[in-house]
Length: 601
Image (tube, rainbow, N blue to C red; front, side):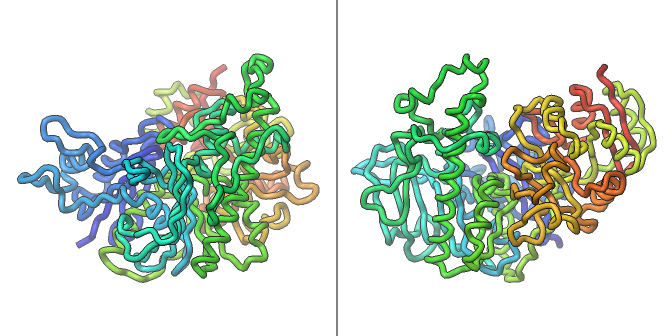
């Protein structure tokens, strides 16, 4: 009998992961079905489980707050997740006690540990030290100054190994305060359901990620849109009017903290730049037609947070290696998606004899993966080391009959549907047409890796502005490139890596390359690249190879198949609706040998 384990990540970037006998069946995010970016409450994703099994052996819940806070089903009072699972027949309803489900396990009290588990079981390491740099993890009540206060996980270090050993070595918790910062070198680990103690830092700071989110909001976006700040940072420069964002805390030896003169925490929602302290930086936005990113103050603050935060993460990694004795390092949590910092870390760690694995699904969707794998290994005690993650094509499977494709094309007023191959698609691209690519399973995480991608000609000097306009993105946002792996070292400096298949690094291009592919090289001479092999994605590899044959350029312009502010497309209907609502005219379906044209003249 197959053992089915499903895990749910409840919060932002919510999603579901399904394992069969410990092997991944699918992992997806709710936003792909709800069409609301970063969406929580993965109800539609739970329903997708029924495409694979009608019964679960175990349902595992991941979040930052207890399952009891998830909300209740009307009348029965069950929490909404076990209630939905039981209504679908995936788990048995306990008729004697609707609040207890023997098949359900709540891991919400160990949010950071789930980030670490996701990394360990996908790194190929038998043992490692995991560094989790996150916004606000598990809600942890603490007795401070004689009264109970709520605190949140900020940064954590774990020593971890197979089959299911995760030992907390260090944890930084923050809260509203104001409190004097304290260090407790021998804090009991009972809350983590561990024996022994760990080193605790407790203060009223915002933490690394929340400080980054504060600057993101200062630049005019939602705090969760930190990737935009990362894209803006090269437009900034050092600014003497900006004090250090992270400073030494009096009496604390292990860790720096955020400077409250610069960053004011507003837990549990985040933090904000101290507007009173930085009046000189709050230039009237009307001077730039309301676009805060045109203000040098915003650009300089983006520069400051990027450069200082990556220094903090480096210090944390070096401390993790020192206190654990491990040379294998896993980086996860929200900061792991910072591809600028990840590349810089490679340079700084070059002579440290450290093996760095950055978990490609570092956002909270990755905690569903971590919870599922951790629960499997808890139950089975299977110590077989899983191989390094091979690809991120983990979404549900889609197969369409030709008449279904034609029906969706007709629904969105397609101009024509015609037979085509890779050569035809590439000829459209080299003639300055944007071609969307839809095939196979959707990608996990926020990167398009050739299954839900928009392709263009990397050689076009106007390409960046053109595609940003079509996608309705900000002018400064850079684009990625997908390159045939065998050519990557002739074009880019990977700082010792053999490949970068998940777009986790913004790498330097080599001399003379920027002029050849101006559409995808950022202002600082970097490009977030994906190396591609035939084994990883045959259709996509062959498309890039055809582009290489026609242009003598082995790297193609690749960006996510969505419009600004929207999630990546999931279904064929999503794909054609995107064409119908934009200036993108061509959708290539390589598995079916078809191109669909939708003109909006």
